Image 1 (cartoon, rainbow, N blue to C red):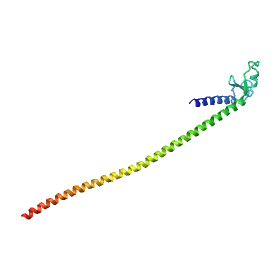
Image 2 (image 1 turned 90 degrees about the horizontal axis):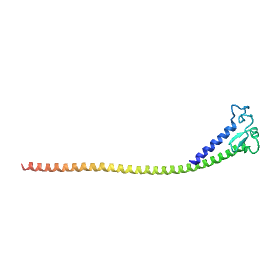
Image 3 (image 1 turned 135 degrees about the horizontal axis):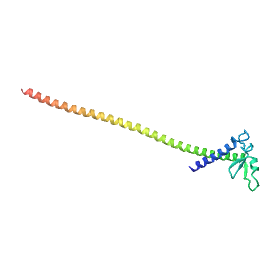
Image 4 (image 1 turned 45 degrees about the vertical axis):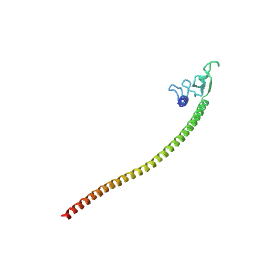
Length: 168
């Protein structure tokens, strides 16, 4: 979280530098982007203390050497920030690749687990079918037993009736 926050802060700072360098003020004396609004000169310097851009005339008008801002070429600053962004992008890309590999491994594990559960469900379904078939056979056996008993009872009654009829 802190790393992402620092990347965002750095991104905002780079965007500010680039916008300051590329855009111009509506009050500028020149129509060129990145021009000083007071002198119309290109904004080629970057004050490392004030963290802002300036033209050579603004820098020259600052006064004595003791009061002058420490400046560097804005192109150097922009290149440094581009390099920093490139390194951050490489780091983030590497992290994304690592996370993707981890997620891929997790997904494969989940897929294997799912397939194992699916196979297990097919086996259980087979057991359920066997139990249902056994229940049907048991029910038919009970019906046959009941019919056999009824048939025996009928034979017994028939035998008794025959005996009574013969005695007459």
